[in-house]
Length: 308
Ligand SMILES: NC(=O)c1ccc[n+]([C@@H]2O[C@H](COP(=O)([O-])OP(=O)(O)OC[C@H]3O[C@@H](n4cnc5c(N)ncnc54)[C@H](OP(=O)(O)O)[C@@H]3O)[C@@H](O)[C@H]2O)c1
Image 1 (tube, protein in one colour):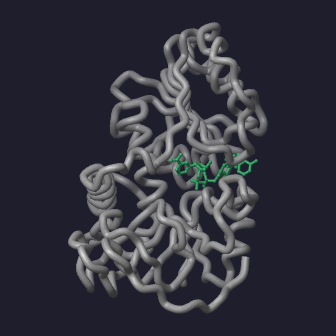
Image 2: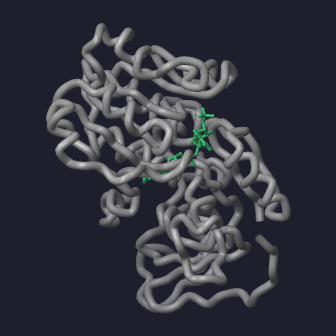
Image 3: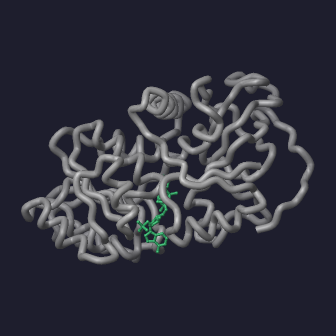
């Protein structure tokens, strides 16, 4: 990772240029950096930002110069200026600062679609959330609780367990010290859970399947411990007619209406205190490598924000 000066980019048709004020750090930045999700090199890292529109291309009707905006899943946010399709920019209300906006878009909209769309939680459901004190994890717990679910979280340390509990988790398992499958069976009287939200992947996947009750949903949405091995679909039948899905935020913000619905829900919940955002650490762009080391090394909780 190097910092380089390049010309300020110009927006083309349908695009806007955003003067970036805050950048959200996400695990996908690590996948891009290490080549797990290959991008054409050279590229500018970063999939999330917030700032002010300072130029618009022809036909970019969704925003105008001076608008406060935020976005996710468009590459190139580790920069002072980014070019973004105007339709992918969400307006940021006056009561949300740029740091919070940059912190909410990617992990927040992920927690939103996982709980509302991929497996829509309802009263009486029990959900298992891995990496419960992470950026997505803390938001996911809070949203799941508002939908009436019982939430079991897994974390690696006692300090992270406290944070998951403060976010509303009913039970927290230290999966580095005890067998989370045995604990889940104990907590659910042997029934298993309705859904597992698994972003850890390699080290949790097999047991996550075994934590499900018949017809349960395994929502594999990341691989912070490494990719999952191929699976024989017959296993899903043998373990109880299970459902397996591997969703991506990009496919849950396909339309502008969907993007605006999810982002405005998050901004409203945050402004009214229904959702508490935890910004754990902030770094300058010059310290981006250290920020990556900490996220990769399980040293962060909640969100990490960079400033250009
Ligand atoms: N599919 C989507 O749409 C989508 C969108 C956003 C994020 N994601 C995924 O969601 C996950 C969480 O993203 P995030 O940005 O919020 O990160 P994060 O949860 O804040 O950080 C990752 C966490 O994973 C846990 N982990 C377990 N084993 C690990 C290992 N070997 N190496 C590193 N971490 C490990 C750690 O928590 P413990 O120390 O408690 O184990 C760590 O803090 C990532 O897998 C990401 O790819 C997916």
